[in-house]
Image (cartoon, rainbow, N blue to C red; front, side, top):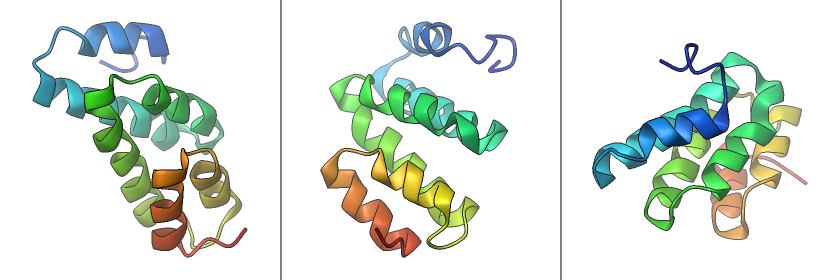
Length: 103
């Protein structure tokens, strides 16, 4: 689905919007992580998805990115610093912690 929607954040959010809340949260979170899976240079787009997500989806979205950083990036890597550093404070601290990222 993601490829057919041309990696377009607006189209992906429109795709996720009509889903019931629990599925919408998963859809939005997976959209964010898919941007990074495709290319870590898409970190700004992934963060934008979470920042602009409905309030009920923010925690699952940022948690998905934190888990991706923990499993998908080397500890204290430039990618982890960029991803964690772009998160709002609550999630930033968790991300730095799990990725052992130093400022």
